[in-house]
Amino acid sequence: MKLLYHILYFFQKRGFEVCGRIAERLGIRARIVRTSFIYLTFVTLGFGFALYLFVFFWLRIKDLVYTKRTSVFDL
Image 1 (cartoon, one colour):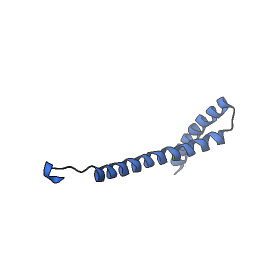
Image 2 (image 1 turned 90 degrees about the vertical axis):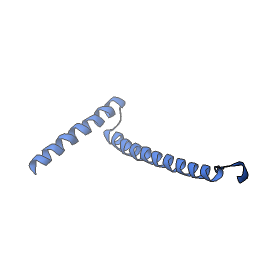
Image 3 (image 1 turned 135 degrees about the horizontal axis):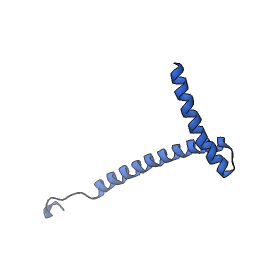
Image 4 (image 1 turned 45 degrees about the vertical axis):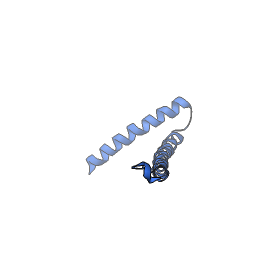
């Protein structure tokens, strides 16, 4: 169990160090950088899902409007 905590601490320290260095470069607090990364993650996932739904409904409406006619007598 102690090994797991050492590994977890290592990744947390290195991960937060990245946010800290970005915040230091921009002149803001590291907490703001971390929360903005979290919010951007949710926004980008939401955008992909919304795009998926848009394409799904667009294709469904297209299939309803444009029907294939097998011959000229199907008018």
